Figure (tube, rainbow, N blue to C red):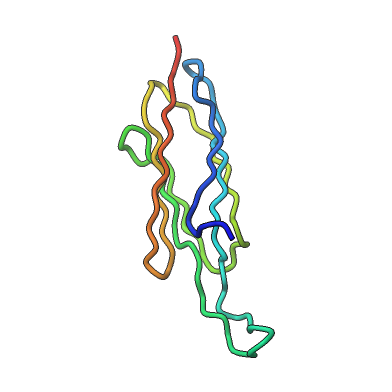
Length: 111
């Protein structure tokens, strides 16, 4: 089984100045609502879901996504972004059980 909280991020490593890029991201997470029951025991499966995802570029927040239990398992996010300089993309995300993760990607802006 894949590790909870692991993120797969796809973004071009090099972009032209002024180019709009799409950040594509999947987070491995069960995203349980708390409403389902375990088929074997009949007991409710506790809620466990991502509460928010924050996108920073060079330490400046540019997008914040608030999520809830209604988001599907292993959620996919696609964010448009236009970097004006080279730098570091940092993505922070948290779940309702205190799990905290970070994913970092370098982006180079050319001429």
